[in-house]
Length: 403
Image 1 (cartoon, rainbow, N blue to C red):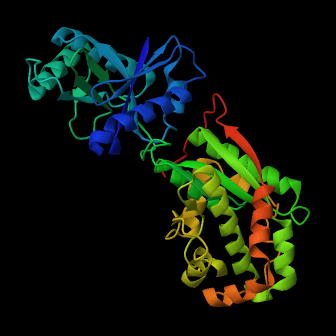
Image 2 (image 1 turned 180 degrees about the vertical axis):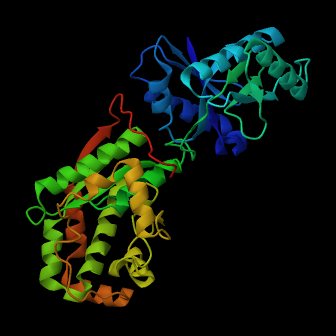
Image 3 (image 1 turned 120 degrees about the horizontal axis):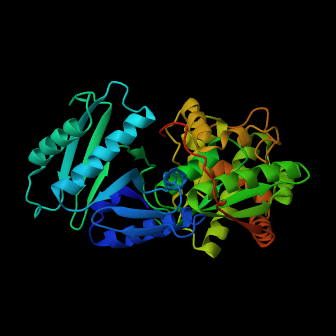
């Protein structure tokens, strides 16, 4: 029977709320391992222990490495609370590493952490003794405390000891769901899916809001956004997508508003519609993929003028990121190749030749007097369609690098 221990970081600092955070994390982990019946996830002493049963450890390990809130994971060997039992498992771990080619220089060291202070042997002494047992049992090894091929880690707990050599990094952050629900303005571009992923990393449950302008934008453009929503669901467990039919709004803006302000007014309308959807769905904030100064509508003046139509907090996880950094993260989380598919979204079909880069709220308000803002907003919200995406079972995509 295989075992894995999962470690978490920030959750341990949550004081009286720690138990609730741990509960949500365990629920998310159980959902991640649901493709493997019989895998058991349970809270332990500052750790979460996963029993894999008859299933291989590595696929379960990969699935858990995608769960927000986990800092690291290790496949472990369980031993009884005696020097002899721990030593036997330490020797077995070294022999396994040698057989797999993980110890080319045949060097190792032992590190011991003794959470159970009732265990009679102090940590430094136990590490020294275990090193002696390994050297005696496996000829040809050498101790290297600075750059070993293998570190034999031992954690002495209340009822058992864990012995392990491998540590797999997790995503960190907070478990999805502990920070409430947010609305993500999801276009078909590179930035907004990354912003949504980062919101999930901070514990937010994401509901995506997409503005679709058929026939100005094609059905393939909508399919592209649905694919992005699915990728986010694969990371966060569940994503609701609200598809707003935006054609009428864009047509009226193009017909009645000054061309240099069309992008500003369009985004103000998006923010109004998103705010109404948020009220209906209990969303506590709006997340955007804006990066300061990246395009004309993302100057501070534009952000202020666009954001002035809502009282909801607007979260901008990418505000200080360079485009190259956003692209790198998009590649890592699996959204980049979808985002660059050549299907336009509604934000790109009516781009003015000379957009206002520093619009003022009173200018936008004056331009909007030619629109029936309230009726257009209500109509768009009423016609919005909703689709729910769940994590695909057995998805094994992992990060190609540490975000």
